[in-house]
Image (cartoon, rainbow, N blue to C red):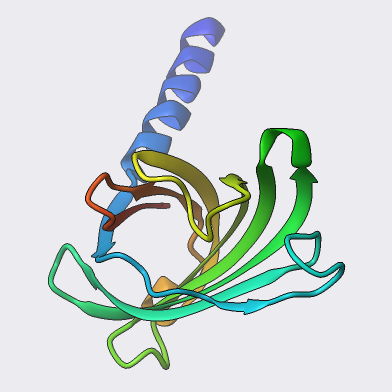
Length: 157
């Protein structure tokens, strides 16, 4: 009987995690404009360089939003032409003053490009939100599509 109770508790815990099923928001936008580039550290590509973006996007439910990105180079593998960059970004819905989703993470980039190579993706953490997104977590997969546009799939818990 005790084993049955343990199995029922484990099953309940497992399915309660599933019942917190991820909400999925898909954000898309065309090719991004050139970033504002702050050349910190050594002149040229170097650790400490910062790239900034601010541009409109659209959610799969038709909601307009603004995206703000700050990307900082934290590591360089010169012989492979690779940089590691930490991103902190905010997806601001509607007028941007209340409902926001914040993401953070690191990804590998070609040293010769400001963004991910086309036809590649990366994952980052959803670290929180404000307004109707207050207290959220989860993760985001960012895809740079072959036509130059972008898709960000947010898996929210």
